[in-house]
Length: 105
Image 1 (cartoon, rainbow, N blue to C red):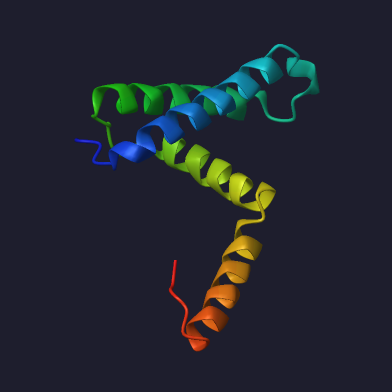
Image 2: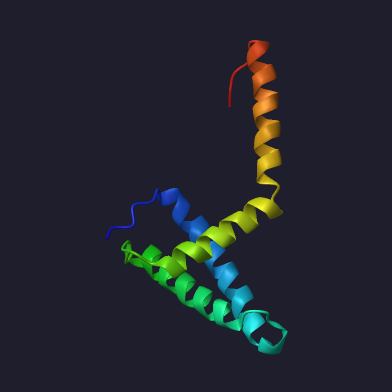
């Protein structure tokens, strides 16, 4: 099926997938330290399929492993970047700006 994503998202997704894959592959070098090496192998496969999908513009669905890996990774990224706090601050600042008659970003 076509992978219909905005073009500006593609380099971001490529970078993230590469970063996550590099981290997983590094972790796999010391499997005795991993809690779930089987899950890491599944995530590597899922992220590799997603990289292929970004390159070809086509994704094979359903792909439960890819969905699950992206769900965990996206939530982890949001938590690490304090996304909820950033959005709340943005909304509060711009709400006050709106009340003051300013332009909304």
